[in-house]
Length: 175
Image (cartoon, rainbow, N blue to C red; front, top):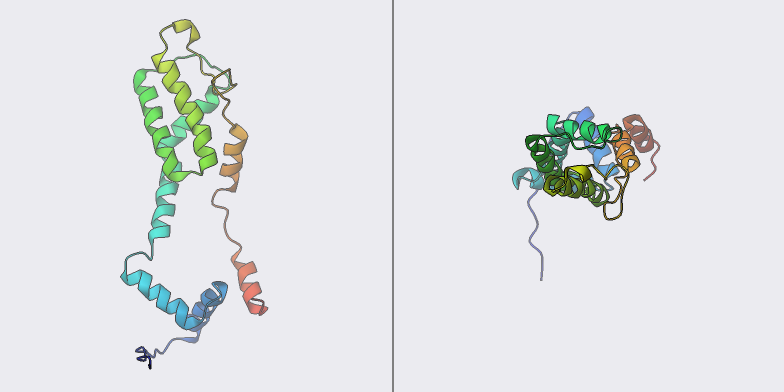
């Protein structure tokens, strides 16, 4: 049983473009043909930019005013743990916290869930004397938020890739 040959396309490319394609293909440990086939397939099936879209959405969330306000509020609670917020403010923090699971790792989601649960506890607390936030220090059934884990994430977030190191690796012929 013989296979029907697949159609092929011949292209003329500038040397510069061919080098760029070759670098990308080598980086993915693929032949140029396979790399270009996958690239064209993802272009036509609409999945080419899915990763970039998700990355941009995450970046927009992390840089949003609502997220920044939540983080500033959380850090301010390290100094003043007492309840002073309006229901509107707390509702805003709750809405922001509910969106975190889309953009963060499970470890960070679990940390932010501590804050969410503590806000809900404070909102529903009947006594005004026990309306203090416990996610900062931890207390019995209210575990402490791991600020260090969040800080490590922020310090590592979006570190630029060393393009020159990749180019040097490709020039050296190592694969």
